[in-house]
Image (cartoon, rainbow, N blue to C red; front, side):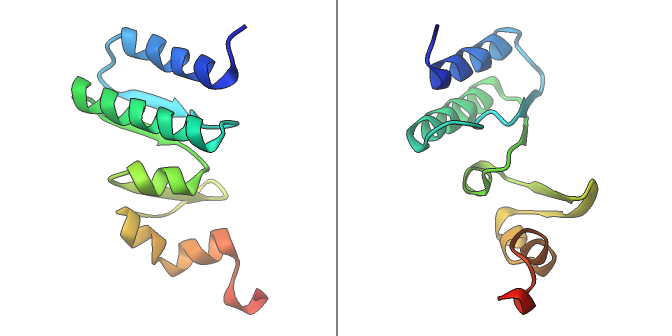
Length: 106
């Protein structure tokens, strides 16, 4: 009976209650509005910092990913395309072509 965004936060709390050594999150921001995404992002960052564990995040919202990730692995059609820091990834021509299309299309 909880609203969607609150239910997702409860799910995160349940995962944290198990005192993980690593936190694996699959699309934790899916279906959330901007405010809910901001809240969830802060909860994930705070939990990782206070718990001292790494977070592996699978997420398609590139704004969220670029804002919170230290390192990224970009996968295209099931293959690792590249990996690096957010600034390295955002300027990588392979990533731009795979996710935005080639310049020839524009």
